[in-house]
Length: 517
Image 1 (cartoon, helix red, strand yellow):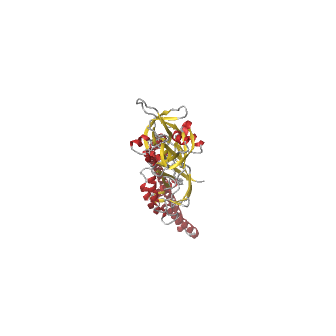
Image 2 (cartoon, rainbow, N blue to C red):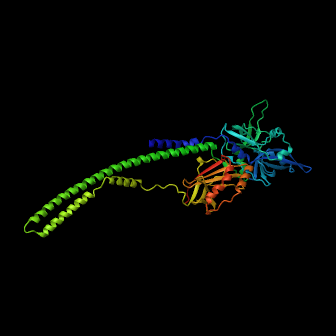
Image 3 (cartoon, helix red, strand yellow):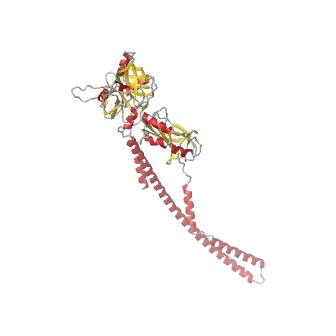
């Protein structure tokens, strides 16, 4: 039975990579997270000291202060130096100006540098081409939606959430000038320059134009592919965030994690059963050997006692003969009597020191203890200090935009990292919540010192939610390493921030840590 469980566990382990490669469906949280970096790009004119919009399109951030859009969106600004480019962020905030730093009309791409006080969360680019019939989402500011809502001219300068429309990849269709992606995620005038996203919110192309649908033909749309976008960015000294990992939903990742735990538990049960069987076999063998050994020793001692008694009887007869003889030889009589007494005592000692039946149990216990051998080295206990190097476990992680690097840190039993960052202890786990001012993302880092697993869950929040998280974080000061009851106090203090976070994170990075040489 134990071998059966072991084989099943091994089979499931072989199937795990296949199960983990199932593609994800689009998750609204991922699209919303990407939409935080989408902006309305407005071409602004001036008449009699009054600013007014001339045209607008969409753009998205590739760095905190750099926006990609279509070349035709900024064409008017290129022709007339008196026109300016306005950047209107989503999710709140004032509009700012930008300046064109690069235009490549051949593939309809342009790059804008933000000149005002605005930093945007950059979108990640998908590392590979999306599969045919794969789901995609267009994000942008279509003019027909503005008109349908009755928005006036001034509303264009007001921060508003972008429109998201879902569709599917219809194929890679290179045009005469550049490489494009054909899709069915609806766009209209105003969407130009906006991102086309995969289910994980990563950019697969820049929406550019639609196919004519005169006569009621089906509508198809074109996006400039990443094969054009990436070289354009790098040619202008912008290194984009490119994510080549498989796009999986968090639900798929959680299911894979449950299956992994079940496999580990099944393997542990199989190993436990196998160890129990080995222990039972070893005990039976030790019991048989102990019983045989004790019985033989008991018989040997009894036989020795009997032999010694026979010898003592003979010596006694000799002593009696010497005692009756006339004249008596006192010296030889004393020798014979003493020898008889010594042999009788030896016979008695041999009989009394024969092993009892309880010796069987003692010998079995000793044999079982010796059979255990030295304990196998396991993961470091939580009560140890150690220096660690942690590397990502891709199959247990979900990455959409985070930069992934190896992590080095020193850990102490009281939850201090690198002698300066205290981790909180609550609910049986060590964690630290980070709410940076420079990034619209909350990270919840946790560490399991027994398993040596470091985990970072990232929540990519809109600006309003980040403001609330920063306010909650500002209510407390994290205790310093080594202060009284620091871990327990921090575990309680972090509760308010954790309570504001969504039920599910956008990203999960899982690392395996080993001792650093």
